[in-house]
Length: 253
Ligand SMILES: NC(=O)c1ccc[n+]([C@@H]2O[C@H](COP(=O)([O-])OP(=O)(O)OC[C@H]3O[C@@H](n4cnc5c(N)ncnc54)[C@H](O)[C@@H]3O)[C@@H](O)[C@H]2O)c1
Picture 1: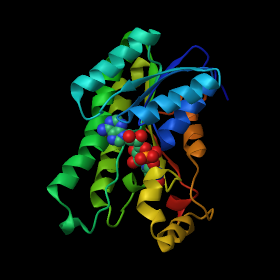
Picture 2 (picture 1 turned 30 degrees about the horizontal axis):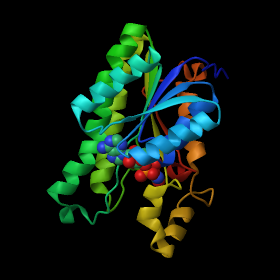
Picture 3 (picture 1 turned 90 degrees about the horizontal axis):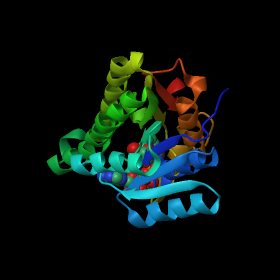
Picture 4 (picture 1 turned 90 degrees about the vertical axis):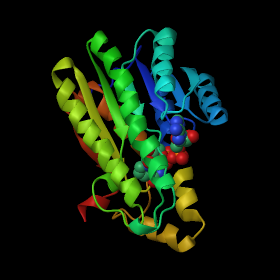
């Protein structure tokens, strides 16, 4: 499989922590220049430090993906810094503890949809023209297994991730003849701060989380990073508009 990434430029949102951070590190380890974008300046700068210490090339740009002008500036700064944008991993996302659907609030709905859906849409809106002008690129958006099926007590989150897959598929078709591939990665439960906030407080929940995956454990951030790198690589040259479950078998049940 071809993973010839040398000299290429990647942009990762939500890269201060968890899946985004692991993917930024994995891109850098393959020789890519990486723009680390996040709301969290401390975590974002620490990610850049880790990349620089390992001999890579990266810079941090603070960006709230829900703000059009900030996403526009993020893409602009990527071009100013590195001259191009080959791969984008639109991964910033939030989960807010929810009850059943009728218990949800408008504020929860707006917050989750704002980051998870509008954020991904804005990122692609500003990345695609750059990739079009360059003659190609690849985008991976973070959805979730909650975007592939029902997620009780996570209805707004589930709807937001279904929407990410809708945006992904539509963009993939619209730009398929322009050398731009657009795919989504759909993790099941992965060991990140988001997981710990949702599950760790209650040991029964943590046990349940492990048991819901046929492999008998939750996933590692590096396992999602590997899938993202594959989807960006030339080896996935015939793969576009796909929502790839990386889920320890959870959706095979
Ligand atoms: N951890 C899981 O079990 C799991 C499962 C399926 C999907 N996901 C998805 O994976 C993605 C990454 O999740 P994670 O588990 O690494 O979470 P995390 O909370 O560890 O990291 C998310 C990062 O996104 C950043 N972020 C949040 N809002 C932002 C905004 N408006 N603008 C810019 N950055 C923002 C946060 O500061 C944080 O650094 C999310 O889209 C999440 O929905 C996670």
